[in-house]
Amino acid sequence: MRPIRKLLNILYVTTPDSYVSRDGENVVISVNSEEKFRMPVHNLEGIVCFNYTGASPALMALCCERSVKLSFLTENGRFLARVTGGASGNVLLRRKQYRCSDDEKFCTDVSKNLIAGKIQNSRYVLQRFARDHSEDAGSENVKNASKTLAHFGLSLLSCDNLDSIRGVEGEAAREYYGVFDHLITEQKEVFKFKGRSRRPPLDHVNAVLSFLYVVLAHDCEAALETVGLDPQVGFLHRDRSGRAGLALDLMEELRPYLVDRTALTLINNRQISSKRFLVKETGAVIMDDETRKEIIVAWQKRKQEEITHPFLNEKIKVGLIPYVQALLMSRFLRGDLDGYPPFLIR
Image (cartoon, rainbow, N blue to C red; front, side, top):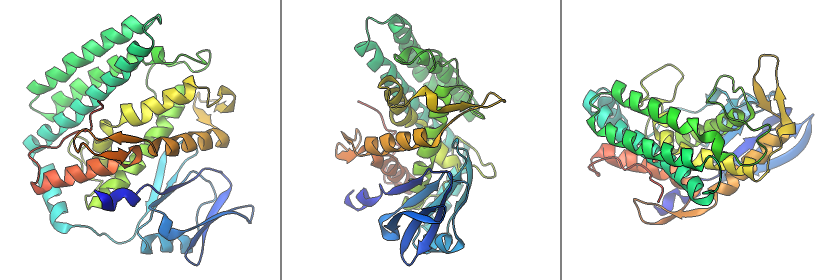
């Protein structure tokens, strides 16, 4: 596992008026023609831009030459485009991936594991709240939701096609998000959660969740590329132009632990302020640049924490979880593992 420990270096450009360019082997960030930051490109695995002014062609070429993923997103985290070089990776592994993606039974079996991991990790988030806030008014509702999720997890065993798995996943998500508002214990006058809204997010909580889900998706996509898999070809999320299906598959089990817990910590610890959100005439809620910076800083800090990976039984940094899961997926496809082991929080 040692060779993958260098894969934490993602540069996030969150200032809207910033421009990313190249100076030799360095990535340079400027605002109004004034240099604000520079970093050698060899220190980076990816660059994620939430800015308006873009990047120079020379910088794009440098990223392609050095296999640095360069992604562009809107200010509220909607993916726009990615710049990459020529296709690379293990052609035999990708051919196996493509064949497996066309096998309905294979896709069903893998998807069961992915969604079982998501449901179990969602239960962990609820159980942790119920344990730490047993006296809160919503604690009983949260406990009941956790029990219901356990039944959904068992019902996956009888699913024999992708549609039935999606049905269970959808019901489990509604149950989980149905009590999510109880998990918010501070700033509830503004950070209210009435249900998941995506495009656009219609409240402050959804704005934070959507932003972090996009960041996690980028990390999952980079992880899959790193091990030689094609992020576009998934097993649960079927082929759709412009959609990284396998990255979405991989992040399902990671959402509760990596994103939801981070969002709840930011809100409940008052690390982000409701005053830094903008509500547009359409009802869309977006964050200002300072809030995005605070969230990215918290995300990067979280990625430096260490855990013991439940399958490897080895200590790794949290930020390496997508890379380890991508590696396990590749080993499963190669036949080195009998099944794909989802990441399960202990």
